[in-house]
Image 1: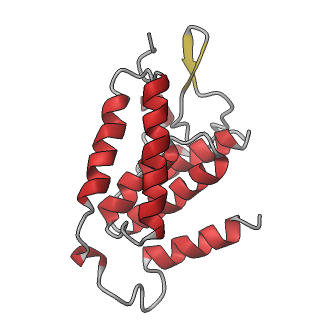
Image 2 (image 1 turned 45 degrees about the vertical axis):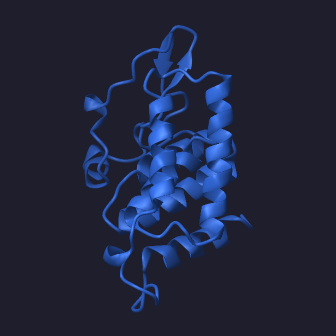
Length: 177
């Protein structure tokens, strides 16, 4: 709980909530970080076959460390940056990193990007609670499953309004090799 309050406060500050928002410049004027874009592209390329080997997991850890450093230095500033950083944090195995992914995704959402639902589901899985949107799949033996999931937590109308497909339209990713 101690970590949740600062993260929520950060989300409000980053998303520009309140009458002033950030003092420096409007979100539309913030340039994307090209180094973060390259890291995001590498992160997504590693996942094209739905299978990560040891070297790819090590590269994930390096990207996460660099994304944390960029965040600390204030180099993640645009909506696209928040969106890309959220993906990198989202692929961590640590609950706090995944929660930070959700905060970053929320900031991205406030600036016109999306992915807050997936990061929240991932955080819920990491803390051994059922996901609520149904966006995350895990491989259990030979089948892909959502794992712990509460499909009745919210109606499909709310899923739609948060840019998540209705349950009947959601498909698991292809099985890994």
